[in-house]
Image (cartoon, rainbow, N blue to C red; front, side):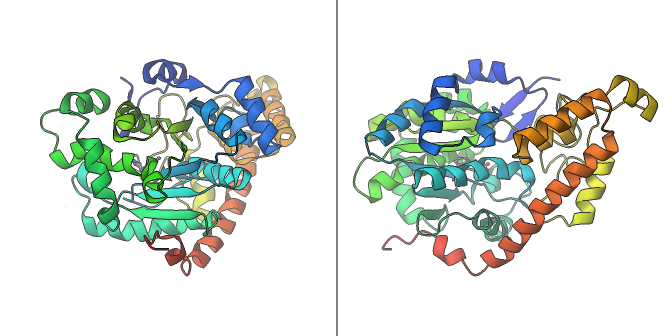
Length: 376
Ligand code: TRP
């Protein structure tokens, strides 16, 4: 299968070394990790485990921070369905960054994006899911005083004027090359990237001073920011920096399954609103196992944690390095059976979701605190 990685589709085997080369991002190296650790004291497990693995200009962000010039964070979510566990990975990391660096976050809900890119998605759908998805973001505990939601169709009044400045500098052949558009692409979709560019400099416009921007995102979004970076200085702002994560693999397997996706359906995806029994059933039934066919063989030859989805998920959700290492070795040695490994994951995910679902309920009263008000 050919590998396809665009902001709208991830298919085939994801080779991260190749992505680094093709996209032109840089690996996060030891020096950067050491600098991050100096400021944050303890590195987030996503950094320790190379889940956030690449960046653009992270060094610049740290230089400025050390000089006392704080950056702001920018990330987003195109509403079109329920949030699944894979979506949470960049947001959990963004929350950590907000806490550690004590900075503002601008969170975009481009409610036109999936309307423009997906045939059957209506604006009623995206409006409903904007309301749903905002709850999931709030549930992660972002600081309401330092977090601003931008909803494209609602904030068009302040965003459109900035978007057209970007749009004027990007021609169709650049958009084609970056996103793989054909001549049949609708013109709204072609324009869209200029809307996703806006939050990378809107705070600088609103606060009337240049503020460095750091964008945590899953690697598939990079083409947007690559294009933005190429033109933004002509609009009068600095290039946004970015930090990129790998995908949480779908339940079905890691190697040739791209990322967890709603399109692939129930068998690969756990939604944040799934109840405990659904989570248990999905993992037991669908999580690809690196175990042997029989218990005897497994005890004798051991399992393969490197392809086992339950183990791989624990590398995202079990923060304790020692616990994780113990699981790795006992699975590999055959002492830990596949069913037992799945049980560990089920417990971990259900504990996480129980808390998330509670916070999600509480978030219903808080939405208004997060939506950006121009005169606040
Ligand atoms: N395009 C993203 C999506 O499909 C949404 C988004 C908007 C975003 N701005 C962003 C993602 C900034 C990461 C960073 O969900």
